[in-house]
Image 1 (cartoon, one colour):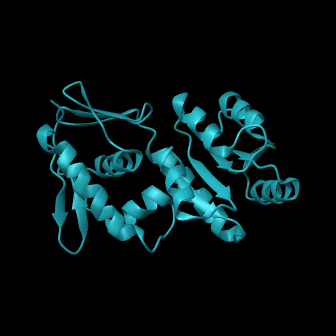
Image 2 (cartoon, rainbow, N blue to C red):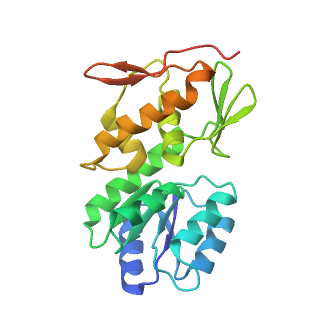
Image 3 (cartoon, rainbow, N blue to C red):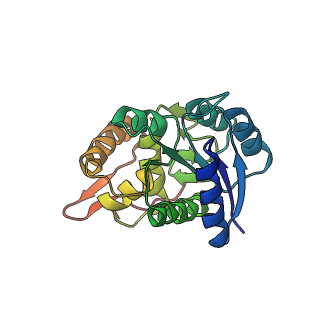
Amino acid sequence: MKRILIVEDNADLAFGLRNSLEIASYEVIVANDGPSGLREARTVSPDLIILDLMLPGMDGYRVLRAVREGGSQVPVLILTARGEVQDRVRGLDLGADDYLAKPFDLPELEARVRALLRRGNAAATPFLHHGKLRLDTVGRRVFHDDQPIDLSARELAVLELLLLREGRVVTKQQIVDHLYGWDDTSSSNAVEVFVYRLRKKLEESGVEIRTVRGMGYIIEKRNAA
């Protein structure tokens, strides 16, 4: 049974989420402030965290930063009334996997939960290799010939998906889903920017991200050196 940690100070909302997710056969743990949420994240090993931003004691950004700095790559869904673009970008840059603004529809949240749990299972491999390139999926770092390559969180996520599906075309929509967990009207153009930046940063490593016109992108298979 998958274990979900909800960090939410609104008792009524937390109660409703807990009931709905337990009916869907998840084990659910609830924390009602930032410090207790961080403590539970470190001790109960959740498979997914649903995290509010406006929390007493420690806001959700600080909780997320502490979780990621501790080395955990548990999928995190930010659930908050702060739906401005800059809030979403900040959360994603800190390592969140998805962002859902309140008010929301419960079926949509449950769909995102399922997508994030599937993604977490797919990324369970601790290291991905392509020639001399190595991606550490736990530490969220990339190396070429043991030299670090500086990638943003979303650039790393795009590279991770391409390596997980090495030898297969990855569509823009699949990259959108991997980054945000749901359709976003502005994200298709953003994908092109991430891929462009990745190409520039990886060009010295010999990793080629090839565009397949009308379909998407592909990294051809190559044996590790």
